[in-house]
Image: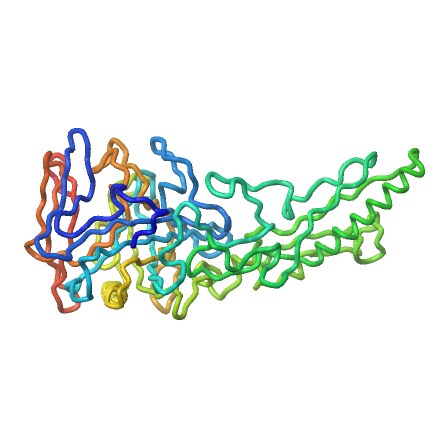
Length: 481
């Protein structure tokens, strides 16, 4: 059953078998649909998708609608380059509703592919980008309920004070990472904002490991927490109170407040340090003495409490849950973009499970893994399936190259520009697609304007015949393959 919170009827969300309207093109483009005579053939648009970033763990995909070619997290599923390190650690989560007409793995006829289109934005020709694909076991309690507008990477409690809670967000100041000013000596000192240690049922900073808006299949981790910073701020608050008492007793005397110390940011580096040489929680407790404080006041934060670097790969891969309710690695693809220099690849695509438009190489098991994943869960009665895409990390055990491009993938809410090769002005025309069981000889095109063409080609891979649907623009009589 469709989750009612996600709405219905939007172009690109669900394309049923038999007559499959991939996009309702307006104006000169007219309307075009795919027809499939065999029950079960389907091109399924994402019913929900969201870009999430570990370095902004409580930010949602945003509520800012697209305006022209404006980049917003609502209309894109950007997968950033340099997956290891202090980058964004972007991922994309996608949910597809497999049509009820597909009742068993046999209905897939040995084919499944997941296609991702690019939005209008420059990407560097000649460079190689790579993506990984994971499938979430739909027994995960969040599989069918995560809401694309509200889902977050994970809860960070009071470490990340965001406003508004959902939408186009920013961090509130002051906070534990941007401490309050103690004020003027002519008034009582303002107390530092406390950093709460773990309590029963909660992580550090009052974070909820089971937050209802957390992303499905992402491990909970505490935000960086330094007890040495907490102790120092407590000492400074006591010092400031004593300074205030001295001023009240002798207004002509020399008294002043000490500033408070910040907790590290969420993306604190593995080797990130912060010197505080005049600390008063250690040494002689005199702020005028330097050299008896901390060479690194963050030295008590272990690597395991630095979320961006808490695992063996220092990437999002370390955050993915396994087991019965976790993710399954399905494969990778890479694409070396043609040409050179900054190029707009709007309407071009990469694909897991078939060769795709721009796909250069892929894990040879991707097609079988994706097909088996979909077929297995359909056989067990599950029709809502969640996938996760992330950048290639250069793992020698699987052979994926490191992603070197900010891959500008379109979300289901992206509206192609006026110069797009197809679907101009139609929100959802470039939605991620799960393509299931296209059968030779049964895919037809109904076109009122004849702007678009669909070609069918047979390809023999791994000793068996595979068929895919290609959506190709016709411009000046030339087909781009």
